[in-house]
Length: 131
Image (cartoon, rainbow, N blue to C red):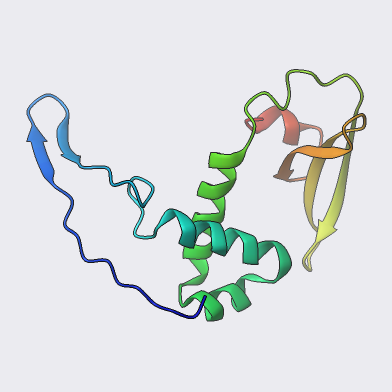
């Protein structure tokens, strides 16, 4: 909410000859993130209902940071088996932004949900992007 908490902690670092520098993982934050799990989940939740500019103002972070957090949260919560049981799908694209920028979607008609999305609108979009 509206209470700021500053956690000051220096994760331990170890220099391994074989692996290089390794940094301790902490239980309250994703690895290599400056934010807590709860903060990242809140940013992603807010991004579902408003634009990035508003999320930046509300959470006090930069535009690019919002996108990076959303990407991490989606990857964490994305079901890896979502494509394994597909039988009846639909593929469509829609325009977003000015200048005819498109997003292609693959939907599961049985479960009535989006299972994949990527920028682009031609037949190479699904083939060229990792599903």
